[in-house]
Image 1: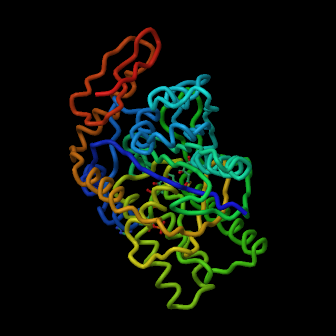
Image 2: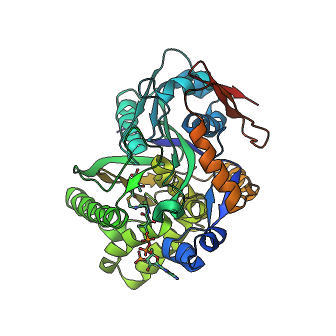
Image 3: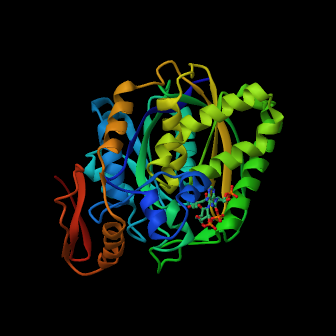
Length: 389
Ligand code: HMG
């Protein structure tokens, strides 16, 4: 059976952030609520010159070498921060990355689950056509609104993954346990740019879906907690994944419990400094695990729990491949995170509110503070104008 999975993966977020201690002070909260109770240290602030398309282009661009340009013939763009109700973000991306026109490119939506839906379709496609590759994107900007309980769980950025046969990073098993139910835990009606959420209910549903799919997965495969080196989670905020892990830990020995908790710490490092990036969050956590855990080895089994409000859950797993580490990629991501500019809460509020101005009217955006390669330059004739710096 051909191995299929993630051959290459990259992450991009903007060059601005705020500190959660500053936000706690501005909102009259105890900083430990944000740092420990929620598990977030910093939050990416996405300027108006970045949107789901440019974030994706900036994440994917370093992956597009000649070989990928030839072999990628499908682009699946997972997002819930769409920029158009009809035309898909994948079209803009295909153009910005200069991919070949003989490509099937489309957008896919199911809240934070979109990238997993894309990845699963991509794996099936590559299993049938082992010489082909698929570019899968998870790109979003998480917005709840100023002074809301969800504000501390905002963030944004994009994950880009190339799915291939004989992958370098991780090969996925075909088995997958999924579960869906029509519920209202988090949603964003077409007329709103900020999400609506029943926060505590959403936490409960997340845990229930995780327990359900994990149970189903064990029945389907016969695998047990001890067969896993680590579990990675969709991380809307990093404490959420910890709650998920704690729900299944009692089944493990105390040594195994400690080991899984250590791996979890490695898997939430990037997410702690970025916040929620919706579709990309689970895959940022996988990347964080790979880049920070020092005891992972090829052939270790990693569990992945994907959750998208509304709601869809899926548990599946994969086996790390011999070349899963990439020191060059890790140091670039860590450098980008370290060299972001920390802005004040009032500067962040100004950026947040100014986003409302990007509507139908012509506008030219000032990108002097944005160091990204791909930027949104403005709106002209009701069309988004993208470009490179
Ligand atoms: P809240 O009501 O402000 O916070 O909302 P809280 O009172 O529940 O406190 C949070 C935690 O901090 C608690 O811990 C407190 O005990 C602790 P927990 O009981 O949960 O373990 N705490 C402290 N800890 C240490 N020192 C202190 C302190 N004070 C309190 N001094 C909530 C929190 C997450 C509900 C809110 O931020 C929210 O609504 N966020 C958005 C919704 C969300 O992220 N839901 C997650 C599940 S749904 C999901 O994952 C899908 C999603 O990504 C969207 C999609 O699919 O597209 C959201």
